[in-house]
Amino acid sequence: MLDEYGLAIAMIVALLVGIFSGYPVAFLLGGLGILFAFIGDIPLPFLGTVASRIFGGVIENWLLIAIPLFVFMGLMLERSGVAKNLLLTLQRLFGNVRGGLAVSVALLGVVMAASTGIIGASVVMLGLLALPVMLKQGYKPEMAYGVVAASGTLGILIPPSIMLVLMGSIMNISVGDLFKAALVPGLMLGGLYTLYLLSAAYFRPDWAPLAREGGEAHLSEDQSPLGLALLRDLLGPVVLIVAVLGSIMAGIATPTEAAAIGAAGSMLLALFLRQLNMNTLRHVCRSTSKTSAMILFVVIGATCFSVVFKRLGGADMIEELITGTGLGPYGLLLLLMGLIFLLGFFLEWIEISFVILPLLLPVVAGLEFEGLNGSALMVWFAILVAINLQTSFLTPPFGYALFYLKGITRGDVSIGIIYRSIIPFVLLQLAGLALCIMFPSIVLWLPGLS
Image 1: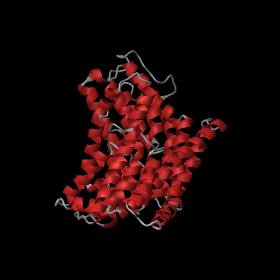
Image 2: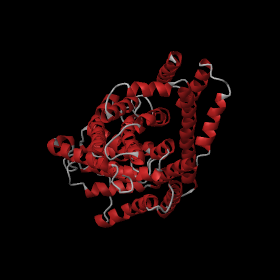
Image 3: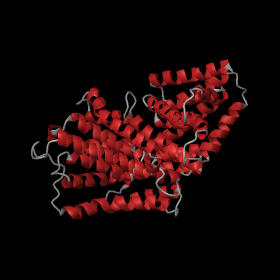
Image 4: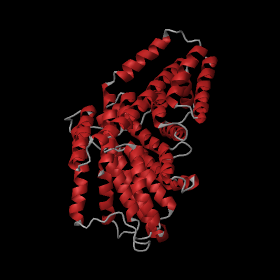
């Protein structure tokens, strides 16, 4: 057993070394799984189990069809100009409020998270639209970059979320329940961002000058009545959100069916805005294929890695290490959250979800919390993990939102400023995580969830 544990530890070390080498994660995970299967002298027929798990648990999993559909919906909305129009109107609405442009970015992040869920597209779109204006208006760079990066990551938590679809498949719990449970925590994080921005602008006016103080930097030349413009630009996304999430929460449609509704609705919205053409459709289909293929290949590689890792005793080793600490339920929960938070510095959420999360589930299932058991416990834990994993997009050295932000600045800002900009927002996310741990009703707010 000691030899098996040694090989399991070696697999983890090899994974971390491989990630720092820059080798593609999907091939790294799969390759390490096959390599250590031979090193560990695992019988060759066992690799047939790996193939069966990949085809039975991944390729033939109908629930995963929702992923390309949600990706398509988000990319189509991003290309249709919905986000740009809404940001222009929100800037007019909050133009006379100190920090109003930053608040507009945060609110747009919430709206687009509930209708797209594509992190890269959200960060790039918000950065290209709002960053030049905020900086010209005199915003402190750390505030400007931080709100763009943090607001763009809300889509990984607020439903419809690709991450929640995958977590539902991994944990064998209802994706609809996860969507319902994530709604309030996601909106709460958006509220915390807004509260921080308004407070920072109030106590440090030089961080967020008003437009007239910073050179009349504006996004919009629209002169139509504000109420009409807000209704015009908000109506489409709200109708789409209600159609997708409402159909799931009402039990009318499954997540996969709701994703199809969203994909069709995004095309109709683009058609209404006269942005639907062959170039747009070709671009969105190509980007959807690339994103979906990337996710699928990582899932296949992670499946191979995790099956071999468990065969070498890795699951037993981790369970013994965690339960051997002698901590109580909340102590173990904090330990697990701390472990996931640290792993988020080095691993993507897909690897953590498919490699680490299955190893922790037996430990979580054995914990006893007052008023929490069965599916309610698993839904609560899943949302805690989702909130935690959202920080992985912001934490260096591998925070993808930071890379997207650095990419669109084209060398105009140092990576140090970008790193400093996300510190308040990471702390806000950890505060939101702490609130959800202390008050499970924030997650289990619907009677059917508790």
